[in-house]
Length: 561
Image 1 (cartoon, rainbow, N blue to C red):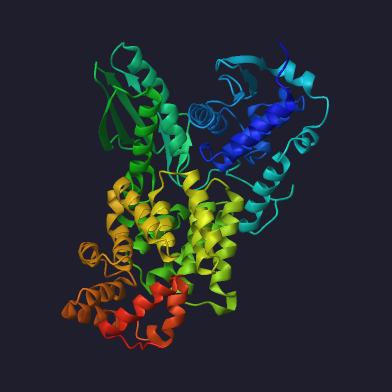
Image 2: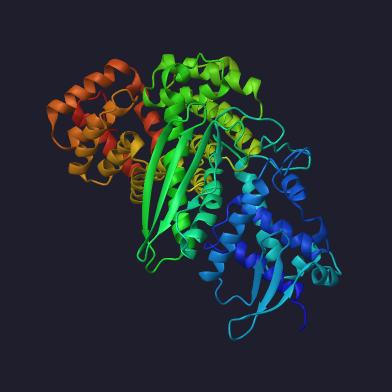
């Protein structure tokens, strides 16, 4: 049987990368494109963990595949993404691209009219058909070169830089960056059914892949030196699978967290169960507000005066729950010192960008001698993305900085890229919901915020402020009143003005007056240029008009033009 035509493989690669049903991250897409191009160019023998790590993921030349499982993790994730694509959007595609387990060299198969796979190209066949450089074959294939060029150019546009061979992309392989470490032990099957064994085998890998998306956490393959250990068990009966998971502190042996997940096996495949449970576990333990964060934040570890750079990130989240100018100055100094000590600590750069954003939007502790705060925020956020292109927190910071810089479309695009990198990160998901709302897409914003609340109830208070704002703007006054009352987050800078607007809209004059008084005590000059403050935060002129009307109704010193 004749080999799969190279042009057909190029078209299939383009079809996959262009499909909205292909759920791979930016990193996964680079991985796929790299291994396909190398194979078609006759260089399949070069496709090893080391070359992928250094040429695709930006690892240093001292990359050690035995101690850094990044390539294996990403390969497993890419295999699952390809499997899902061919089940959904690619069920009728004439060519199938696969990456068999045990290696990273892709195979290319033809699907015959009956829907079965035909001839496969492996290393030898791929070498034989690579008579011309792949970039020329891509140019001959309709649309492929243009599409790939636009993908690269679009990314460079909103990142604000053009990547060159000299651009440094260091994900921390050469040094251990600050933060907690975790080992995921194999899950144990408690019975001999094939279903339990399959889920137990796959669950550890899926959890590892999901947790690796949280860049505040380092996953270790070996137990030695890990701060925390995650393990669990799997048991199956005729109707359901029961999975237990527990997180243990290595130094003390304390069980910090444990949960039980029961999933029906009727009408479900094991892969879906593994993915669902892994998402839930990752959300529970790894993100800001999660189990590890709370364990690390106890006592003095959350103080901004701590010499530990990771403690600066903990102090940032403590500051976010009680924002004051004093805490802002402390955390800013701590994060500046953190990035001085660890210049490749992308998460610290991301949070420093947020501190600069707060300097701009709340006018906290201005440093005019260092240049405009918003420019510093954009620079720090872009630097964080350059350091670690898979860091969702960096995308969150860049999204927010771009929003306040007036680049709304770019902001929302970056935010969605960040969520694609880590769908479990509700900190980013909630922030994206706020940005969609303030851009005028209140329904979409409300939907994202509600997802964040459902996935991470521990941060519900913060999310409820965003949901209250959304309900107010959409005219759901009753819900807005309910949400702003249960949020009751008066330490948040603009809680009281939002509360006053909502109460005024609901004709609750006494409550509106109390909230107005509290806000004016803290922010006496906020209404000196109210139009400028609104322009920072809301895109839609109709939203401006509503806020101005209710601000006047609440008794704030504002007048309609």
